[in-house]
Length: 248
Image (cartoon, rainbow, N blue to C red; front, side):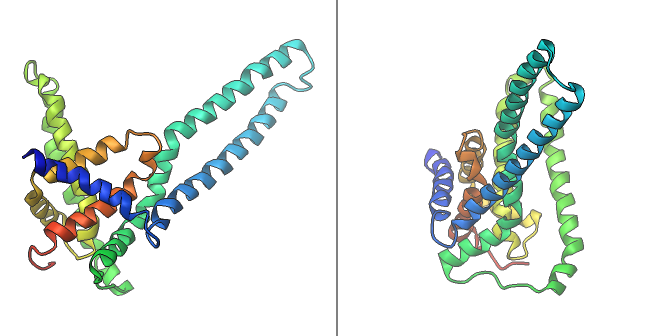
């Protein structure tokens, strides 16, 4: 059991190695660059507008009180910008990475197998739009089906001692499903089938999800967790799950 659970974190480490390879590195670097450009532009705009705001609120600004107030407000402004960067940059980088995840899974699978999923044209994408929306609703229903009862456990005396552990296991499982879904979606597999195949991983799947979950808490590392998790999940798919029948 311990060895099986350790195979999950090993796949996240494998994903980190994969995204460092030529041709795949861009999927880790590009979202960070996009987020960096956006945050720099926002910071410059905020700096300019904050200066204009102070000029309107403190016209002239030659009195000692105006000078003192500026001396207080500017450091507070820079502190606020630093806090926004600290708490928001990783979120922005991950949001920028999200549109690339399916393509990254396809490229990683091509690198590992030499046989990427068959490309689809715009007609297939349009035909898949409604099933994809229904698939998202299934995921939401599945999440609520487990999250609501687990949340209630926190309110039950005695049982609430075990609630954090149960919630942690559930969160690890959902992280595993989230990233394993990318390579499977490239083969037309829907959420119920993703769950069925992911259960074959046993403790390894939970270990992978837990590793991803904890890695998101590590500064700097959390900037590349998403592409690394997609790459690792794709390797998991190729090694352990792909041969379980044909895509539906």
